[in-house]
Length: 62
Ligand SMILES: [Zn+2]
Image 1 (cartoon, rainbow, N blue to C red):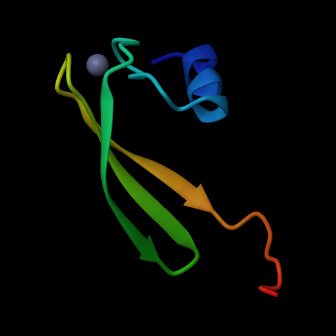
Image 2 (image 1 turned 90 degrees about the vertical axis):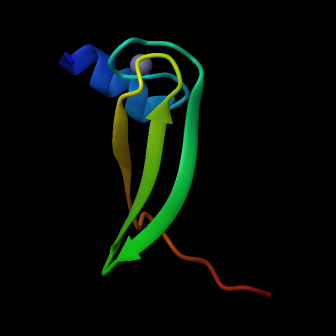
């Protein structure tokens, strides 16, 4: 997977980064320390990966 695909996936994570198909499915979400991992699977090529999230901000709940 190339840099361009990686960047477009990070901006808009609604396609498979390997086969570029749009039928992907997010399953479980788990937090470890300051990172959150989302399990994602492609329904077409069956590849599985983690989307990795990091804290970007916080806000008070009113
Ligand atoms: Zn795929």
